[in-house]
Image (tube, rainbow, N blue to C red):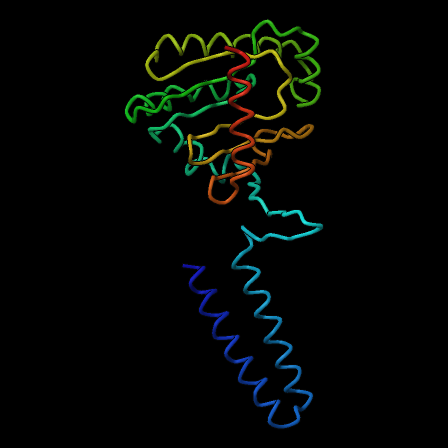
Length: 238
């Protein structure tokens, strides 16, 4: 809808600008007329820029740069359309997690959705035998459980165990593998559809964390890159 509105507005503004330019060619333009033409030209540029803001490409030294969608507070803003919808997509979903027990507490309804829609969920979770020093370093990065640091270690252990327990209950729709490398992000990739990649900045609460929202159509290079990296991690821990 907005795209059509912008198209029509831009077309109308272009026509109006051309009319003014033709009139100015026939007779000397006054200062108000020149200002009006300048104003219309600025409006055209802004409208066209707004129209293409998601796919705007800037060419610099032979390279193409593209604006990518970044979702702030994505756990609120993108939850229904992109997170919840992944579990009912009927596709293969690769899900990268770290040690979030809060996520696990709400996972059963999502797995029930997987069963109903025949969605195949593959989950990567942090290995329960990760050294305590590594978990502590990650806790310091998250800046959480400061009063009870041992809770983070327990959380990491329990998360891996709970995922594997869920796998026993949902054998046809859930596969779980653990990994021992340092997590730099988490999120999910829905086969040939979209990816929601959560970034983990220092001391950012879960509700504050931004995420990249990628699709094969709007961001083919980035979507392919992250899909492949998620797959590489899955294969490396087979």
